[in-house]
Length: 597
Image 1 (cartoon, rainbow, N blue to C red):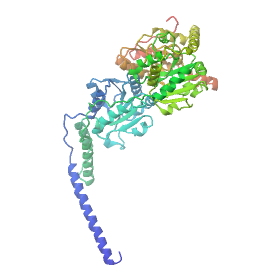
Image 2: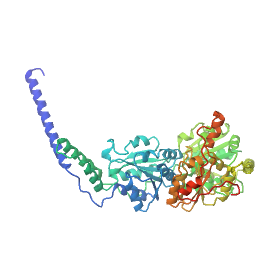
Image 3: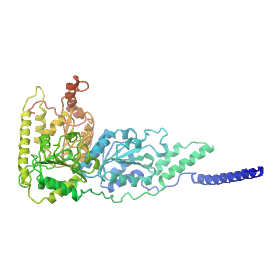
């Protein structure tokens, strides 16, 4: 402004504009305050958020919900039970996720766990990471404090999302009731899509209870008084609470979203087929990822038989060929499945196909395989096909579909050049089996020989038995001796090597296969992680046989630690009477101390 008059006019203009803006703001503020003078009337028959969650689960074929009770999530599991979903309540939240993991592995339906806020969620962390590394489709529904109380010192209020995001495939929180159905539907889809994995859905408690209950509880929090601050606070609480419920929810009964398969490319199948046809000493290793489509397991078995290539299995694939003697032959009578001397076979092989197995510590990061061998790695993850060693052929896709594709392209009943190799592997396998039985005959002063125990269990297995492995030294022994009688008859933690999976896996196995005879092979150290779940077995009438190898120590660690460091520090336990512990929980306990028993 160049003159005093111009400056005066400008100041006046600003004053008029500011006054007009203030008037407009006051008008809208008064209008909004009128809207917020009380709670809205909601339909008394409207479904609560907990009921919406339960209906989505039912629409997706979920038969079991694994929970530990908590007020934050009580509406979910109460509504689930009312709809006929079996609610299995456990003694520690980690068990609920382990159970959900096993249920997925054996049925192909996502396993669902529901836990309360704060420590309920934090207690699941180990099992969630185990599920992530095992590629298990698990949905964790976690409670949370009410939306209006987040960050205000409410009971069990923590930042769940920051905690969980690094160990799940996808996570989300719901901010109003209308968010619940889309969030749970997406969670059930995402956990199965592509590479399966765990997901987390945070459910604030004020979204789960009926509106009348929430409004009643919020009303008790309303401050008294007529000050402007109090009136504004009342308006905020009314508006926030009303917005939780006003938007319509999507139908919880919609059909599940389709989950697409990942077929390997025809070119990859052709290249792999050509390598096998030209090989003299091929080895096919089938890992857990090949078992993720449970409906295709029968086709996978038929394909393995048709290929006639020697097979070793890992993880969930143990028992794939399902014969009592673990040597189900090809149509021409050749033994195909081998359990012993895998390291020797891999050092001599000229072609190795990893179908759902990866080059991690279990295969010495690739060093276990002949460096001159042609290597085919088939995995749903591109990163896994490139892990630790370059492959001759890297295939991104479902490994089970690749094996079935190979079988479709094979013209001859067998590749005759493989016969000498098959005979060599059969002789080596049989010699090792004989060696194990010889070692089982050795007496241990005052103690049972664990090989004797495991061979006795093996002899007692039935066609419908499911084996759950939870331990270190004793479980390592069991792996040499136990022969699963069927595909999907073996459950171990997977690559994470987690102790404490036993009870949860058994609960999930019973939910998936209620007529199966379930055996848990426990080390005494591992048994301590889930001993209280004996109470869960008794309450839910779960028939399970727990075999505890009691050597009073963390023996797998002790053996190496004593050699390297000369001390047994922190590795010694007591010869606890675990059979009496079991009886205290209502189970039947036995103690076996003699070979004759």
